[in-house]
Image (cartoon, rainbow, N blue to C red; front, side, top):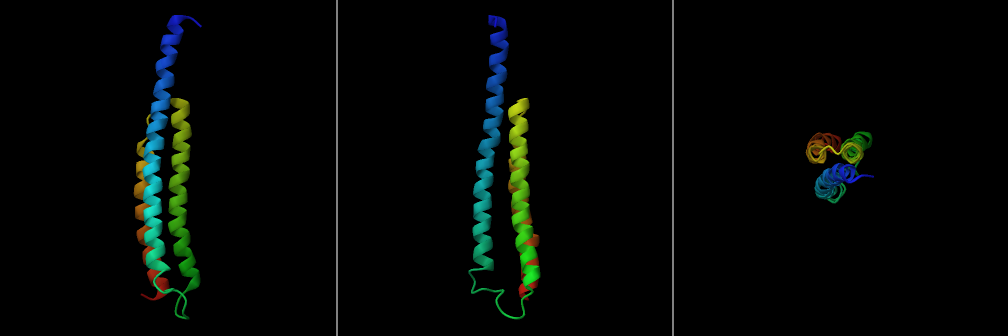
Length: 122
């Protein structure tokens, strides 16, 4: 490979790594947001003396609430993984995708909490 070709190939490789690095860095934030939200979810819905243990609880609706919360998190991580692959292959900066995923995790918590509260009769 000639020196001119090496000079043009090197910045593209560095740019690709830095764009992927940006996605990975924000994905670490996304993991922290998910863990914090999951702790709140577990604390408020299951550690509070089993709010859904008595006969007045709709167990199916409570399971739907769990699926909604975990599904929102899983969807956001799946989109982040896709963005990381696209960023690695194209060199595009897609660090905004895991940031939107963070928002999606927090937003998914609220309808799931409302559904769970309705199931528990609160």
